[in-house]
Length: 192
Length: 192
Length: 254
Image (cartoon, rainbow over all chains, first blue to last red):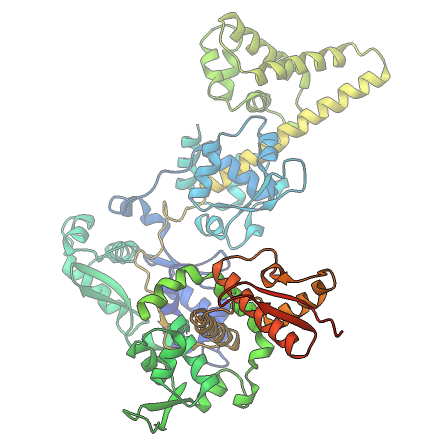
């Protein structure tokens, strides 16, 4: 069944207004009886395809986001924060894959001490959060990633991260991830 | 000249992502040479006409807004009930236990004057009601609790209120009163 | 980056500056391993050890201050190398191999995490590459008109009111425990047996009294008690003159 125009308008307004991704079940409660939220989302996604803003599924919900190709021109007007330094990105990746994880375990993987500022940077950006303590000597804090992490990197869930076995070499990885070439190239360069 | 689709996409993304209304001249600086911002805005407004969100001109520029007819359906009302102020709760308890009772008697018990707003709060909440007047000088109004009072507190009848003895023993109360006596003494003196 | 770092490792002292670009010994080792251009699972640990030791040696030649962990790793790698080349026995050879495998797997782990970081970094990031709505609308309304009413808070109000009332009522003067007539009767009865002859009434007063008022009260009670006992014939009383001391003794008829 085709979703009604009224449902489309309602969903559009709801997701448009929200500051954070809107969970599908929230949308479902808003829709008239018998209307499938998935069908509404699909229709809305089709309507916005190729436009300046797009409807994406992220961090367990729906959100409108500007099209990626417009970024270079938009950032001339919109102020953007600095990208995370390499150490922070590596630390974030370790936390994402091994969570919950202690600082000591992160240092073990990286083979070197972690500067205090690194965790602070990630905390400040709300990408990680403490989640209790490990029952081991010193009761070290355990770190996990947040929904902001998912949202920032455009992930629906942690399951969207590549499998560990696929993390072999760059060429393969970036290809398999089906990423925008420009963005990938930039990052690789800046990584050097 | 018809504005290009690229210009429309850019304007759409810019207005969407901006934290404040976007002035027309900011839009103008973003557009390719020869593109009229007014024409772009008009085309974008036409595209969004009748949709869940609308492109509106507000003070200082352009902004997306939820369609007016949808707002009431999307607005969620969050009820955060207030607590009664301590004075009001004490007054209500005095009325509940001693009804019918005059304002003067309440003041007698509390040892201090009762602000008019306190009785008004209770009246407004329909927790108390006047019930005639006492045959004494000035014929003061007598106050009693209402059936709303009973239902709001989940009581079948006034007899369901815990008895004084069930609650505390007087010796305990006296003791705790003694503890406060230094502080209380001043108040009592001034009341005298 | 990796190729140049290794190429320069042997000769030029300029490589030492590059050490600072590495995040610790494991980072350098991974970079060296990657430059072997083979699967990390098949790297030559011996070659890796040689390269690392050469770089550390070079750094020492130009007296670069090296953090302890670089040297610890160097010492451990030197040990590993000696065990891999000339093991003292089968067991030692096995230990060395396990250690080498452990190093290889740590490097593979770090490599995977580095790839993950790269993958993440290549994703369009919200707030950097793509943008959400800059001015979200708050479609919630707060209704604070309701009242939160429950019995516990009503009871707290009730107790508060009681306390207030009792707190003021305490100004009624409290009864002072005066020496009562009953007390005096009891004391006179007890003491009379020990007093053979006329004894002044004042001797029958309690030993310690807080103040003059209490003394007067005790005197009055004791007088009343003695009068009562005199009336019932238990004792005799006498007073030589008006306002003179009163003396009592056990009645002879008893």
